[in-house]
Image (cartoon, rainbow, N blue to C red; front, top):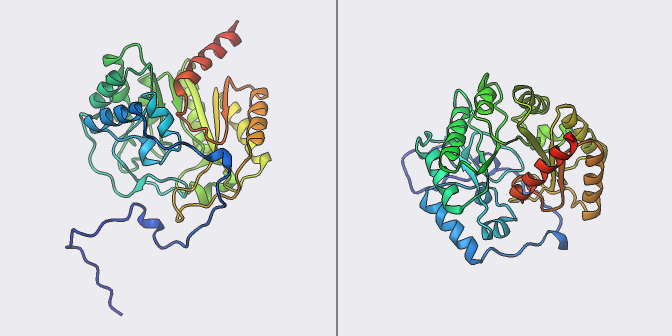
Length: 319
């Protein structure tokens, strides 16, 4: 049998997740009432969207299909995703496009800074796709973005959510030297689920990354988050808490995994609000300065308010 591959026609739309196209559908149970959110249709949402588009920016709010986009954008809170809209990883939970990214936009740091100014943000969250194709994983681009925001909006506090910079020696040091106020890197799930949920990453490398930030600069707040409902056990979630505290991580987020499409990992279970409250209570007893655990918790949800609480908790503990 001969297979012909059309490499000429340009009218074929490339799948968003080519590696998942041939997978069988994974069916999730119906969403419970506590997962429902309102459609984004407010004036504030429209204004935020206009500023994002005018500056040619990408947001993780849109690319990852965040359920909180209506609430956040109504308040003009957007999380910018730098270095393009295409990721070199193919995690089973993520809705961000997979493939080979294009070249970096040298003007992007300034565009992010300008959008931060126009939105009047007191606290900005900047994340990125994974850029395994770059020698430094995009570390210098992160640093340039932090410096551009500082120059344009000197009173704005900056939170970054980075990839793991796996096998990118010296990358973390470049980002930490730019002194973000919060350094976030998500573990995403418990170690036993990495092979199926986050196959391109390494759990203990991510733990060490967070620990290394504190070694470089103890004044930087560190933060990490996981999703639940992916087949993990309760004792595994508690072990993740202990591992993060061993790395001196300050802030933990726990949210419900929601399946982007039927080709993504299925939701194995919807964790109840009472269970989330239990996780939050346990996490505080383990020593985290700040914990956010609820079905709709996401890394950047209420980030500005949470940062203020994080500062207050550190000040109270140091007395």
